[in-house]
Length: 489
Image 1: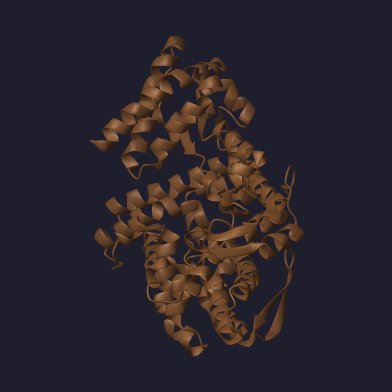
Image 2: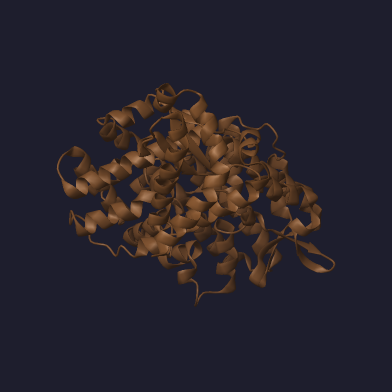
């Protein structure tokens, strides 16, 4: 593979591009748009340097995918000619794997399905099968729709669009060689190029390296230890165990301190609520600049790659429209938002829930893993009603707006990697006390946050917070049970 261009990257050093890749990147608005979409959403409001883009990340994933693919194809004895063809398409698939992300990345993903439904049924500005957004994550659906639209450009640069799509989704792999499934797991697998890049990049740009245990030398060792085994996918040589442990610990620490920082979670929830409210208001009265912009966002979600729509689906354009709304202005200015978190860290959470913490976390996970939006809404409504009774002892009233709930999602099972041993492939968790400790730590960490408006404290005094903290362990199981029953009815 002949490279003609080099890009200096603070994480990987030099990222090299072929002539075809360089021309495609320079001339593709779909790719260039990613320069203006922040990778970490609202996290930059907490970590000011966490402002790098999806473009940076996509180049990094392309670089790592190539290194991993070259390693795996070499071990499988694939011919040089076939390997070059596959690696060429793998690099392009990696470059394009995130083109369907909304402004601020994952921040608004929970709202996309309802936004598209409103655009199809109410505003009639989009024509797309809404059920597609029920079967996969919205940004993945949009990515596939965009790939359909840019197939001619891919062909012009010497790529087979079907092979690029097959490397990004199993749907297109049925009649293709096994090597395609091998390379597909590099972009979307248990420990893939996507995760390896964002872990390293997030450490660098957030500065949140405290307690982490992984560096670029570890990444090289992990890649060199990879092989592919049938249904298990990518597995790792036992010699890489310590480096894999470092990766798993680092990933967990980033979730705890960056992605699930209590303020990051709050800012994300408020931003999501602002967009959700705008969708609801525009459904009943579809007039004005915000409503017109929501139509443009829905067009993007449905795969529109026109220049006008692509540039509107950026962080800056979103901000220029939504800062006309006072709540979003306050959020962007990081003004005091008027919320107090009932707990911030693991220690605070354990003080509230004590020995019940694992069962409370299980209850929260069950409610929030439900696809039923009603169950989550009912959870909050019933919780507020129960807490009203508690605060009644202080002769203090509680409104639904006084409470904000936000889920903190982390999946430790996503780290279920396999190690090659003399006895055959074995899950790393079974061999490693450190990996077991990460899973046990997550079982005792906050799986949700409760935020209280400071106006409640002004009305009811500091005692109100203490009452709420004491009441939650007893109230929450009942509330969750009611929300599940009503949500299923």
